[in-house]
Amino acid sequence: MINREWHLQSRPVGWPKPEDFALVEAEVPEPGEGQVLVRNAYLSVDPYMRGRMSAAKSYAAPFELGEVMQGGAVGEVVASRAEGIAVGDHVLHFLGWREYAVLDARSAVKVDAAAAPLSTYLGVLGMTGLTAYAGLLRTASFKEGDSVFVSGAAGAVGSQVGQIAKLKGASRVIGSAGSDEKVKLLVEEYGFDAAFNYRNGSVAEQLRAAAPDGVDVYFDNVGGDHLEAAIGQLNRDGRIAVCGMISVYNNTEPAPGPKNLARLIQTRGRIEGFLVGDHYDLQPQFVSEVGPWVASGRLKYRETVVEGIENNVEAFLGVLRGDNTGKMIVKL
Image 1 (cartoon, one colour):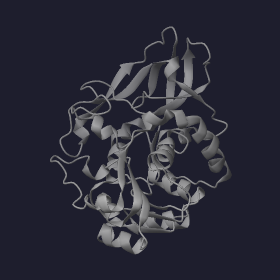
Image 2 (image 1 turned 120 degrees about the vertical axis):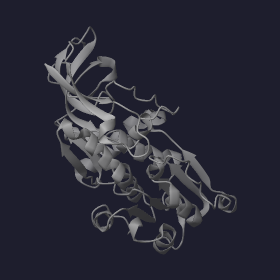
Image 3 (image 1 turned 180 degrees about the vertical axis):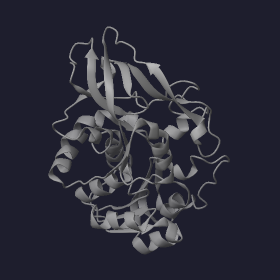
Image 4 (image 1 turned 60 degrees about the horizontal axis):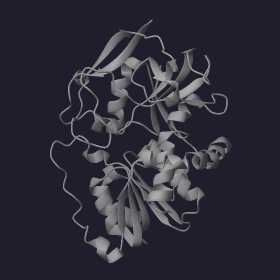
């Protein structure tokens, strides 16, 4: 069998270009002892992957030039030499950006295709969902009655943060997004109390209008002017959870920091970054609480689905541009 897989050809400078990547054909290897062969059904593309395309030291090892890249994937086992995983089982794993993957069974997580659509295990019930859950409830120490501001609120993580906050008793939830259609979605479908299009004017002014009594929690997916605006509206003992800063990922020069950091002294505010990998101990709690919300329709989600592995790079670039509503998924 022939496998198609995406290789990183050159390290992007600024915005990634299609020529930085190559779709390569390779033979599908046979699984060894303790391994399984998976035919991937859905692949995940996420903003953090941009950092792995750089050689700079970070929390995750960079992608190697000329080698297949990695990312979340879910698919069907088509060959198995491992106990506990049979042909026909569906598994979640981290060898995406390819059609077929051979992996050690211990690195695969069995998922139930009958309980939820396979794609949800990459999004609302997967890593992005756990990111929202851990960042809001643990890192930002959310408590009932808090006022919450979420940037990138129509994305996979942000949309779930806002809804979890509402389900947990937030007094007010405000979101920012990059289009009027997304703003409408946040308020009418996801139940946000207010939302604004950051392209329509000053983020600081729009946030002040949407949160006249300030915010207790800011969940940051964007950085830049959003972070500065949130600091400006932060209440006493406010908390900021930094999940991502997509506004600066393609910068070729260091981005200036917020000019109003001194306000944290006045508010006794706290800023804390986090990585979902440090919070996998919350996975059982997350699934037991969020799963029923999704099943009952109390927590809604959207997916932007791109067809075909040949469009994997374009889907990834779309995430960086903000083309997606909810989780960006590539369907094979």
